[in-house]
Length: 228
Image (cartoon, rainbow, N blue to C red; front, side, top):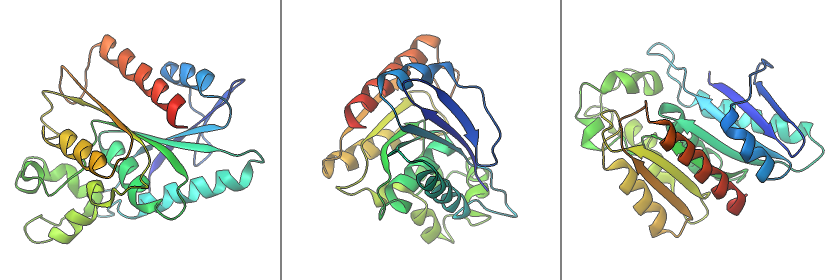
């Protein structure tokens, strides 16, 4: 199962709910996005919650699809969807947006905050220290023995001309996301002419200074205004 925060943003109000109906306090950073992007914008924030015994893939993608279908059937006004993820959640956001949503094209923008995009990178495939972080997604399947599922769960493999515009943010000292992940993602998007914007900040996987966080949300706001 995937934990999924839903942030419905309009000019007049902000509502947050999970798939189970639990309410959340609206992150202050999104207030400006809601006010500047107009009515009917839904930002989905997925968080991976799989385990070795019950891997998240592909159940988490089906969960997101079900939530989007429910929202589309529940609102009388047109909704625009953006998917925002952090770390493993960003990987899930990209995997859904580039692959699972390929037929419907409900997702208009995807935001990756330190999200991995290619598990066949040696930094993952041959790195036993990071292997435990991938097991909750795919189960106990080492890369050397099960390369197919590592390829299958790599978002970069599904990028095509019709993929949604993508904005991403990464740290230059991140030990959990290999340095080459961001340029590989950007290069692939550029090769098929998908709108994109990427920023690399000083710092690791998290704990960025407030100035960088504020700059990131400002850039997300601007990106949404252009592409939603």
